[in-house]
Length: 409
Image 1: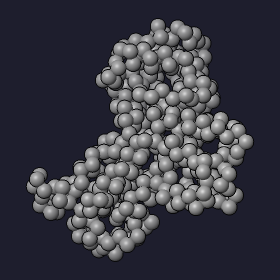
Image 2: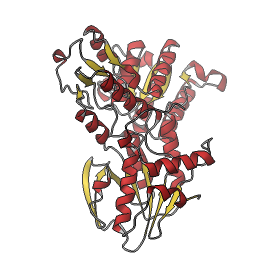
Image 3: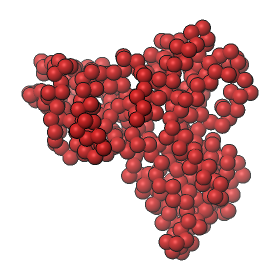
Image 4: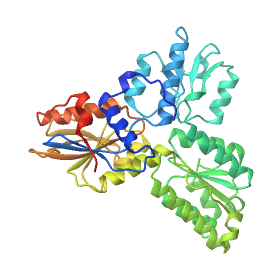
C-alpha cells in the first residue's frame, strides 16, 4: 500500500513501533487481537487497528501539497478535510479557510471565490451541485486527489445500480457530508432515496409491500428522495449502498432485510432475486471493517473501562464507541486534555450529543484499559493519552523501549 507524506506532528514513534511490530508478525492482517502494553499498575489493551486510514492520509498529504505548491494563493477547503479538530485546526493555522461547515452551511460566500484561488475537495467528496459551481467559476487549481477512493467506489456502485434500472437506496446519516455527496451523485443518475437506519428500512418495506398509502412516503422521507420519485414504480427494483463509516452488522442487517422483503413480496426464487434486488454487498471501507473487528476482538478481554479517541463529529469513531459501551464503561474523548485528572474526565455523550463530566472513572490502585481511536485520529493523540494515563499512576515510558513491552494476547 502507498506510503503517504504526512506531517511529523501527527506521528508517534511509540505507535509506529507497535504497528510495525504487528505488521511484521501478521502481514496478512488475520490476527485482530489487541496489543497488550503492560506497565504494571496500568495495562492497556490497544486495538490491533486504529488511527489514520488510507483515505485520511491521502487527504492530508493532498492538503499540505496544495499549501506547498501555492505559497502566494488563497487556499480554501470546501469543508472539514476530515472529522478531527486537531487536523482541521492545523490546516487553518496554515492559512486554509473553510467555505462551508460540516452541515453544508455557507461560511464564505461563493462570490468571494475567484478563478485564481485554490480549492481542496475533502475526503468525503462533494455534491454534483458544488462540483458544477466550481466549474462555472473556472477554478483551475482544484485538488480532487484528497477524495477518499473508497467513497468514489461507492459512487461507481451507484452508477452500476442505476444503469441496470434499479432505484438506489443510500443507507447513511442524512446530514453527513459523505451521504449528502453520495445522494447527490445517485439522484443525478436515477431514482434514489436515503434511509438512516433499520427502523427506516422497515418503514420503507411497508411501502414496498403496499401496507402504507403512497402519499405518506413523501412526508416521512421529505428531502431524502430524488425529484419525480414515484413510490409505486420506483420501489419495484432496488439496490443498497452504504455510507462507508457505519456499523458493519447494521449495514448487513439492512441489506439482508430489504432483500428478504423483495423475495417475500415478489415470491422470488434464488435464481430471480436479481429481478428486483441488486446485491452490491456492503460498501464499507476496509478501515471501518478492520477497526470494528479489532474492537470486537479487544472486547473479548476483561478491562475496567474503554477509552475511544477521536473527533466528536466522526461517524466511524462514534460506532467504535457504540461497540465498546455495550460491554463496559466507555469514554469518548478528543485528546489527552480530556483526562482532567485521575478522578475526572470530560467526554462526549453520543446519545445526547453533549460533553459530560464523570468523576472517579479510574480505579485507585491499578487499571486495565481498552484503547482505540477512529480512522481520522492522529497517532500522536494515542501516545499522549497513554502518557497521561501513566502519569496518574506515577509511571512513564521511553518511546524507544515501548516495543519491548509489546505482548501477544
